[in-house]
Image 1: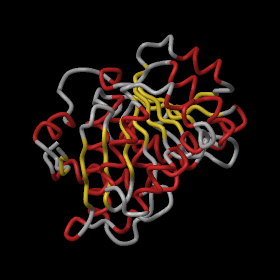
Image 2: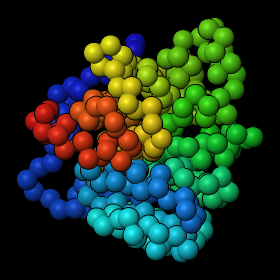
Image 3: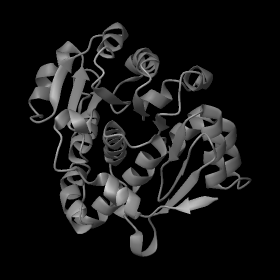
Image 4: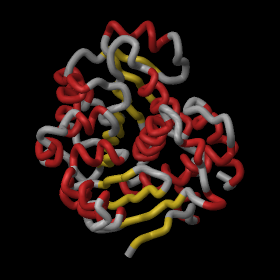
Length: 284
């Protein structure tokens, strides 16, 4: 059974915030950033996580990158994070509810940080470098993932982790949704394969399809950084308590809706800023 993603009443209601509570009631998202000059992608993800309703978002980067990131961020907090040992130490704070790793992280830093992040058993989104870092030994990644993880590859990253499935997909021997299902079963977590037709599946076989085609087309998403924003949206929703599968579905819908809301001329920075108007339109 494959779901065609819509904003169901359940999802719309989950996006709302109650009149009570405080910032920690809505989760704390930690976004890991790379070295000097590589922080833009992580900042996009962090901004998206904050816009979608995470109560707090912290961007964690090497000490050398603090000043660069501080020059671009206000509501997003900053923390120096030197190594995986320091990351493991952060899990003593039970208020830390979700992580986002990959955008601009760099392959060496990803190889070190991803296992530590997954060790913490928090809700986690892995994108970009956090996926490519395991091209040679994807089993190392799959052995560490858990049901509260979302992988968000584009086709190139999917090919690095699942070369046989990518080959079958490109040869027309398998449908995209079936390739995504098999990938999710192999990885033991939710997999979101990006594209104009985005497919999502979890480790138990639940699957969903989002067609940004025809009247729902969002061609402006073909721009640098758009995928980083999607990763941040999903991670922000997971910080708030969404399941991996529901966060992936809802984040995908919001991502395309933001692109349609802004329209031609869109760049990635515009996507989080379009989100308030989208949320008002759906009465959140």
